[in-house]
Length: 90
Image (cartoon, rainbow, N blue to C red):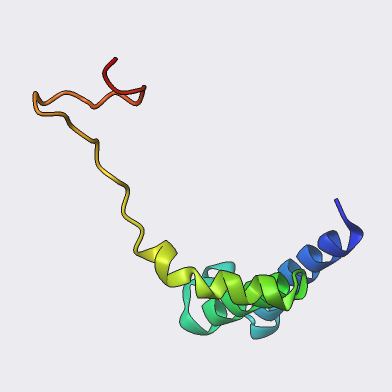
């Protein structure tokens, strides 16, 4: 694993834990909106910092397609069975 990856992960987890302890609360406070923003924002920031701008634009550009993905149902022949994927009739 790349040292920058390890450093980024340590920094992200350290920032989350430090913010919890500096606030004087319990780790369960991460469920609150402000800490959730911290975690999600830190995650997105670390992801953007570890990739190229082109990759980030493509990832955000396909987000709508990814969230509305629908798996194709089985293709049926006229008798209710699955259509074969092999070559057509000989």
